[in-house]
Amino acid sequence: MDSAPITAARINKFSGTNFHTWKVKMQMVLEERDLWDVVSGEVKLENCTSNLDQATFKWKSRKALAIICLAMEDSQLPLVRSAKDAHDAWSRLEGHYEKESLANKLFLRRRFFTTMMGEGDDVLEHINRLKTLAEQLDAVGAPVSEDELVITLLASLSESYQFLITALESRADSLTWELVTSRLLHEDMKRKEQGGGIEGSAHSQAQAFMSRDNKRKARPMKKTGACHKCGKQGHWIAECPSRIQEDAGRQRFQRANIAQEEELGDYLFSVGGDKTKSSNMWLVDSGATQHKTNSKRFMRNYKDFGPVDVHLADDGVVQAIGKGDIVMSMKTHRGVKKGVLTDVWHIPKLSRNLFSVGRFIKDVGPVTFEVDGCFADTKGLSGNSANSKEKDCSSSV
View (tube, rainbow, N blue to C red):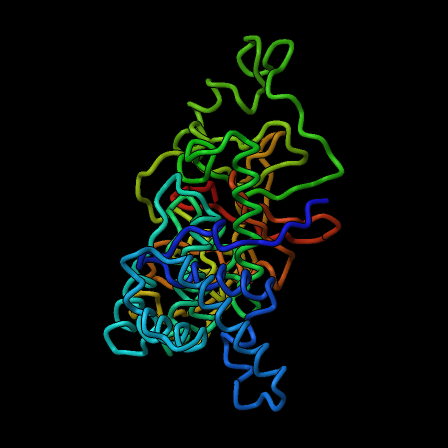
C-alpha cells in the first residue's frame, strides 16, 4: 500500500477565498507531519527545558512555516512574510479571515439565512454549503445552534421537498441535524433511482394520501372482460365512464391520480388534479392538533360544547362549537368504501377542512411522506379508521 506522506502541494493554494476549507486541509497536513502542536500553540518554546527540546521545537516550527507559506498564493504572502514562527503566521491568518467583527458576523449571517436550494441542485452540496457557513459563523464568535441549523436547512429546500418537510414537522421535538440530513440524502437517492428530477418528485405530481393493507394485493388496473355497467371492454365498473358521469355531482374522482400501480394494498381518498377551490376540500396539516371542518352537514354523533378559541397559522382566531364524526367515501381498487374520521371539531368560520397528521399519528398510527404521496399504515387496526385527503382535493361525504 502506498504510504507516501501527504504534502501541501496536493492542496489548492489559498487565494484569499474559502479560508475555512483551506484551514481544515492544512491542519490535516500538519497533523500528518506531526507539526500541528507547534502551530496551534499547544507546545511553546518557553516550555521546552532542554537544549534538545528547544532545537526540536525550532526545527518543527520552521518546517511548519514553510509548508504554510508554500500552500499560499503570492498575493497572500504579505500577511505572513514577517511572522517570527509558524504559530505567529497561523494566528495572523485566523485574525485576518476569522476576525470576530460585527461586519464579518453580519456578512456570514446574511449568507447563512439567504442560501436557498434551487430545483435540480445537488442535495449533498447544499447541505455541505450550509454546514460550512455554520462552522464559519462559529469561528467568528457567532455560533449557530443545532435547532437553527435544522430549521434553516428545511426552510432553504426547494418546493419539491415540501412533502418531506411536512413529515418532519410532525416530529419536530426529535429533529436533529443527523436525522434531517440522512432523510434528505435518502430521499435524494430514491429520486435518482426513480429517474430523478422534478418530474419524479412530488412537485410535479398529484399526490395521494394512502392507507395500505399489506395483506391484500391491488388488482390490475386493466380488466379483461366486459364492464358490468356499460358492457364495454377494458375497465372495472368503478372506473366506468358512464358511472362516473352519473355520479359527477357527488364524486369528483375522474382526474384522480393513482400513484405507483404496483404498490400493495388499497388507497383511500385519492387526490384529484382539479385545483378548483371548494369548502369540501381537505388539507393535510402537520401543525393542526385536531381534525377540523367548517360544515356540520355531514357529521354524526355530534356534540355541542362551549366555544373554544382556535388560533390559526395566520394569527387569526376562530371558534370551535362542537365535534363529531364524518363518514367519507373512499375510492379503492375494489370500488368505493366507507371510512370514518372521528372527533372532528366543528369550526363554521374555517375556510378549509383540515386533516391533522399529529392527531392521526396519536390515535391510529404512523404517517409516512414519500415522493409519490403520503401513506397511513392501518395494518392490524380494528374499528374506525381515520382517513384523509391531501392538498387541494375534494372528497365525497
